[in-house]
Image 1: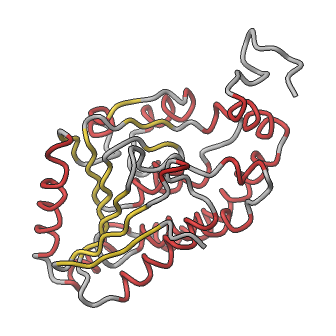
Image 2 (image 1 turned 135 degrees about the vertical axis):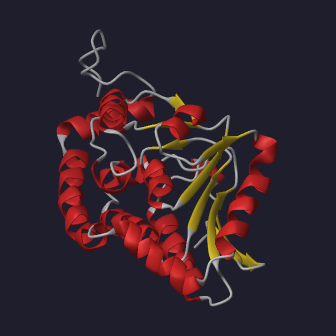
Image 3 (image 1 turned 30 degrees about the horizontal axis):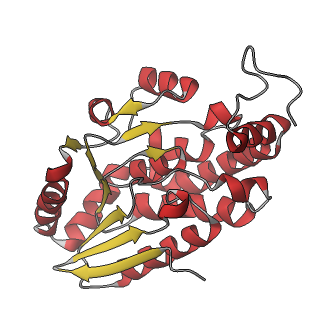
Length: 260
């Protein structure tokens, strides 16, 4: 199996890097499995005080691997993705997302599940699910607590692309910085987080999560069923075909209705 995720620990910081630029770091079954494994190892590593999620290539994460989804390879994704989001959300160690480029759909779920997110000003975001006939179900569990309801309604329903400055204003990320300042800003956050006592940080994270941590598994189970229903449905299949064929989906006004 190709190594799609790497991990290194230096100076108390475990950096986990998505390295599948050929498919824009899409959440394939293999990448999800490796990412969860590296995250577990980082949590078990006593020398790691802070975890950073980084990426190679121009895109942080394009969301689910639609090629696999079209082929029916969704079971392991359906299990591993909510488990990953829960793992990030409940991690006793602070997790920082570092975005030098765009995040879409499930990639935004990963960003929302982290404690701190820093993005280059050139990064863009979009909840693109509805445009391919599926629902931002599983990511809603971690995204909705971050956003004001009006913002969530607009962005979930339209699938509009928005920039890092708006992502900062609406609470999806903590900072939007010039690309050349990204490394320094992430290092600044890591330095501040490392000053906290490990047990105190873990307890504070539990305090911030409140009762929600106990509800996560049930919420993800419900959202997984909803997500699977739409991925397997006629609209979802058509949306993924249209995306792969770079054409409008049949439901778009004015689009051809006889596309196969």
